[in-house]
Image 1: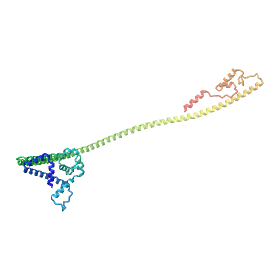
Image 2: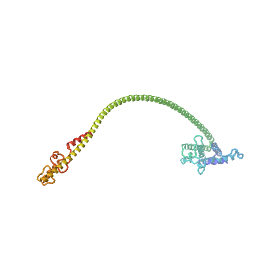
Image 3: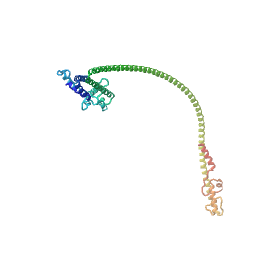
Image 4: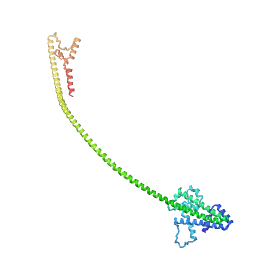
Length: 401
């Protein structure tokens, strides 16, 4: 059953041209065609077994090996064959059970059979170094494109070899051609092995060079770091020394400047103290003079008040004298009406000029003592201080203020 399925799968994977060549070869040389077909089936079986072993190693099968009912025969292989498709997560498979790669790789996937698509998916998600998650495998990545490109090249190389084998079987000297192809395949395998060895050697050489370069760079970095650390430490020491020297210079300048400023301050303070003493003396003199002037002003005010009182008293005396003279004049006139004293102010005036004259004398009497001596007035007249005396008193008072 397994061989039939493998044959059907291999027949599906082969192109139509291969089937036509095979049919023609079976008509021409049945023995060679059967041997070629058997060889192709063996290669397909070997490839499927390798894929099965890889998947079996990467992902444990959900079966019990110790099951007594399970025998290591064809039934086991059929059961394993039915379990293998379940290894791939269903959520990342399409409707046909194929891995759901990104549409970006549609052109590459169209050139591969389903089995190789599944194998590529498993290799990406189960490899030892940097395996991809199913989400990453579903996206776009350079590793995916590189692997699919290699698989396409390998698949077409395989088909070309199969085509050459079939063509060799259809010719008269097919056995020799087949042997040459086998030798060519061995040479290719040996060449691939040599290329692989060269790649490994180059890889080791590159890794060695990289490690040596890394070591050299690390040594250079350590040397440079040590040198920079020494330079930094030397710079710090130099800066500390310069800072100490600069600080010492500043302290010396500060001390000398402070001493000079203190001397200048003391000299200025002494000058100011002397000036203050002189000013205090002058202020004392001025204060004494001011107090003396204030006392003089008080005395002048007292004298002025006394003078005013005396003048008022004298005015009252003069007024009493005038009233006495007027009374005596009235008594004389009652005896002798024709006796008229022109120095006494009359009660009534018969002439306008006489009234004007007496009004002028009355207006000038407060300032003119001679009029007060010569004439007697009916009403009281108050003596005024002279303007000259008042101005002198005001000057004295303003100067004292």
